[in-house]
Length: 340
Ligand code: TXA
Ligand code: MG
Image 1: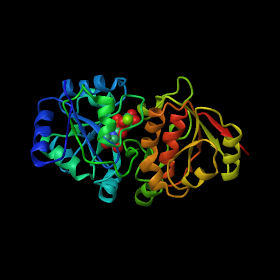
Image 2 (image 1 turned 90 degrees about the horizontal axis):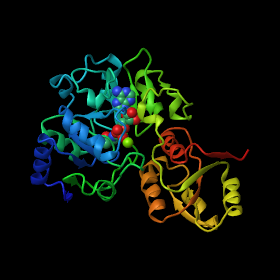
Image 3 (image 1 turned 45 degrees about the horizontal axis):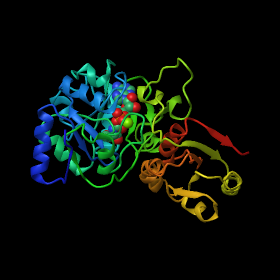
Image 4 (image 1 turned 120 degrees about the horizontal axis):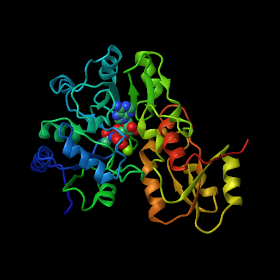
């Protein structure tokens, strides 16, 4: 199959909508990362998503809408809890996915769970594609399972070339990491995946929100993840990444003492001039927005360059940096060296 990368013109968006109605897959831009979309109400189309990504069947998908009224129109959930309404009011459309008790969504989407994840993206092109499809769209990130999420149409083409008919090119993604995932299906709201909307922002609207253990720690063997996606080694480049938890000088001295061929540093912008190895900067130390925006692109570049060993800075865990930390410790397979 030839994969066509198309600009988001009116005609091309209509064509994407029609392809989606016909059960085909389309790569779509969103404000977070690119998605691999299919009609969420068509089980056969949804199965093709799992096939194209090589995604384990027990990892559920997010259902994307372009209007809050579609939740009721398509009976996506059995009820909308009060806290969900407050979050929708505050942060939709935007990089927030809300998990609620499911309505009549195919089991292929929810991987057999009794809950469903719903997101209303803010990217105007995503909204237009959903509206053109006239259906909610199931869409995971458009990467091959286990690889860094795509933040440009070229990243999607790299992973999906020959597997899908269309990719709509909406430019590079502003947020750069996937949406925040929160469940309000239980007694206490739980943050399952940190993203563009921070833990602090969630608590400002609905009060206390637990943070799932899997956000920060590696799951023990046999432990079940509240969000199935968290149990897989995710966002993994080919290089071995080791995170160094340390102050500025400790990091720089450690990396310079361990420099060798095919070793590189995944560092803050300010570190670059002091390091003796090839550097991949992912933003200034306190610019968490830039770090989120750049992290996946930088991880892909590391692979393109065939780097073997990478010493990375261990990101902060406050605000939006928690999302960057969560992705990087997974890319590092939880290998962290702490220099006291
Ligand atoms: O920003 C995003 O969320 C992007 C764009 C395309 O919208 N999508 C995305 O989808 O990141 P994906 O499939 O890569 O990640 C969805 C995450 C997974 O970790 C999955 O396990 C979790 O959400 N998830 C989905 N439905 C769930 C449910 N019912 N209960 C718990 N976790 C769920
Ligand atoms: Mg993903």
